[in-house]
Each structure stands twice: as structure tokens, then as C-alpha cells.
Amino acid sequence: MEHAANVDFARLKRARDWRIVLPVFLVSIIACIDRVNLAYAKLTMTADLPWITPEVFGMGAGIFFVGYLIFEIPGSLVASHFSATKWISRIMFTWGLVCIFMAFVTTEFQFFLCRFLLGASEASLYPVIYSVLFPRWFTAGERARATSLMLTSLLLSNIIGAPLAGVLLESSFFGMHGWQELFILEAIPALAFAVFFFFCVKDRPDQVGWLTDAEKEYLTDNFKKEQAAMQARKKYTVLQAFHDPKVLKLCLIYFLWVVGFWGFYFWMPTVLKELSGLSTSLLGGAIAIPMTAALIVQLIISKTATKTGDKVWHVAGTLFVGAIGLGLSPFAQSLPVALALVCLSAIGIHAAMGVWWTIPTTFLTGPAAAGSVALINSCGNLGGWVGPNMMAWVKVNTGSFAAGYYIMGAAMLISGLLVLTIQYKLNGQRKDVFTAEKVQAENAKLEAEA
Image (tube, rainbow, N blue to C red; front, side):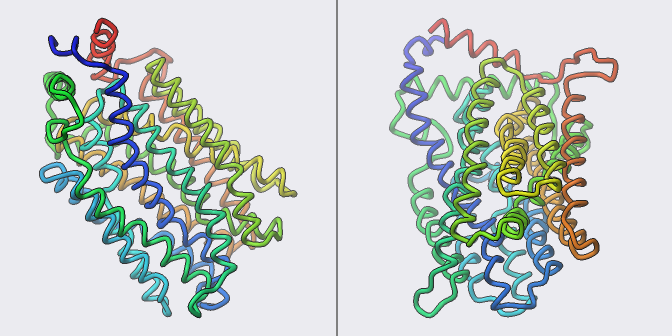
């Protein structure tokens, strides 16, 4: 591309980090805080709402993902044909409203309804980012880094949210309980940032004034070239993508992964509190330790995956680490050991998430990519329903969480083994899977020459 010679790639990288990655990163932090604050609210809200038994809590945690599942694919397809940034703004505003409503639930029905509506409101957020917004702003070779940077928000939301929740739960303003304050105060950023995102973040490079003409042409031409290369290999319709064996395998991998992910997240504060006896504020601070460790590893993983071009071993390896952490957790008899195993678990479920979400867009484009990423995420959200409910069932029927942790560890292990089959046959021979890697190599060569 002739205009690539006029592109300052260092400046372009910084500009997109500030103007695209940072706003989406903040969206994700707010989303994660509002999604999992129930796990911390439970520590005190059960005293005011005694009908929240382990079964009710597990169902409430899981029904979020039912709402997510129902509206995930339709929302992604709407965004792919309409506007990714406007759709994300809509998502934020509606989930902020529902989060406020959570502060005033008084019955099981209201509890389940608000959790369902929260999932329905947030549905399609991440698939729209992965498959619609980022491919227009980042080349195939850059998306692992950009996605990993954005997904550090999952960990930072806990590093911020856990101590904040601990403080709010032990305070009381305006005659409200701490858990009510938690839901209301953590909803306000979603409402405010939705307005900012609507007006300030754009769908495509040609819509902004902070890029040069050469930079706009470079990004636009790269996007068209990548789409054309993948469609020349095989042009997927949405329905064809839904039946593709590779897509279905990714669905199964992510389902098993998320069984461990959300089973861990929704019950981890309760398990640690039972083991340690810490106050809610101290517990929040303690949880920030393993989340910080996982964040550091995630940044390392994103850098090495981008440098080496490897996706499979980065994802599978971290899943194996998570399987070890979850599988050994029942043997923890002290807080330091428990926190060490939480570190391994958090690393396993988080560190390769950014690399993982670049895999579908290496062979899918346009609405097929948006729909398929939504399908994969929806299958993961089924795991989000299974994990918390499975842990509740295990606790009620065995009096312990041990069997639940074994199940989550096994799910993570199988997920990691399945990831290896993306790149390797059963006889150990490598197989060509990623159809966009040639395009990535050409982009890297072009940037180096420029």
C-alpha cells in the first residue's frame, strides 16, 4: 500500500490505545463490576433478605446468563448492520437502570427478574467489541494485544470492585443498607459513560478527525484486505458459520471454560469468608492480591502471543494452570494457601482470554463473525448458568464446596485439551487452521518496511 509509507505506526498505535482501547476498557470495567457485585452483596444482603438461600442465590447468579443467551445473537447481528458504538451505549444505559432496580428487590421473583433483565441488557457487549468494532480499528496481527489490554478490565474490576464493595457493605447512607448502596453507586458510572461513549467513540477510522488521511486509508485498506482474504478461502453465511465444526468446537471449549470461570467468581468470596472469618472490607483487600497476580500474567501472555503468533499453547497452557488451582482448592486449610490457589485459578481463567477471542475472527468475517462470536459467547454463558447453580447444588447436598471445585477443575482441563486439537491432530501433527495468518504476516512485513 503506497500510503503506508506515510503512516507513523507508533503515533497510530498510541492514538488508537487512547481513543478506542481505553474507552472500551472502561466500559468493560463498569460492566464487570455491575455483573459480579452480587457476589459481594450476598455477604450481607442475606441478613436482610433471608429467602436468599444458596439455591436461590445460585439461580439468581445463573439466570443472568439466560437473559444474555436469549438476546446475544440478535443483538450482535443488529450491531453488525447498524452501529457498534451506538449499540454499546444502549447496552450500558439499560444495564445501569436495571442495576439500580436490584437495590430495591424484596421477593424472589423480583430478584430473578432483575438478574434476567441485567443479562438481557448486557447481551452482545463483548461479541460486538471482538467481531464488529475491533476488526475495523486493528489489523489481525494487532487484535490479540488490543483485546488482551481491554480484557485486563476483568481483573482490574475485581481489584477495584472487591475493596470498594467491602467498604460499601459496612457503611450506611440515607437509611439504606450497604448492599443497596453497592448496587446504586456502582450503576451511576454506567449511565454517565453511556452518554460519553455515544458521542465520542466512532465505528470506523473514516469517521474521526484524530487520524491522518494516510492512517485512515491504511486501516480501511487493511480491513478490506483481511476480509477479502478470508472470504476467498471460504465465505461463510451466518447459518453456515453456526454449523461449522470449528465454530461448534469453540462453543464447547468456551462452555467448559466458563463453567469454571463463573462458578469460581460467584462463590469465591463466600468460600474465602467461611475459611478466613475476615471482615468484608479486609476480605475485599485480600481478593485484590490474586487478581493483581492474574493481571500481570495476562499482560505477559498478550505480549508473548503477539510476538510469537501462537494462540493455541497460550490459551491451553493457562487453562491447565486454572485446572490445577481449582482442583486443589478443597485442600486449602489456611488463608495463605487458599489465596495462592485463588491466584492459580484466576490466572487460569483470565490470562489468555484476550488471545482466545482473536481466534474466531481469523476465519470469520462480517455478520458471520458477529453471529458466531455471539454463539460462542452464548454457549459460554450457558456455562455461566451451570457453574453457579452446580456449586449451589453441591453445597446443599454435600455440605461442602469440594466436589464443585473438582468439577470446575475437570471442566478447565478438558477445555485446555480441546484447545490443543485446534492446532494438532490426534497423532500430534500440526494442521493449518488460522486462515488469516498469511494476512497478519503481510501486515507485519509492510509495517516493518514502512
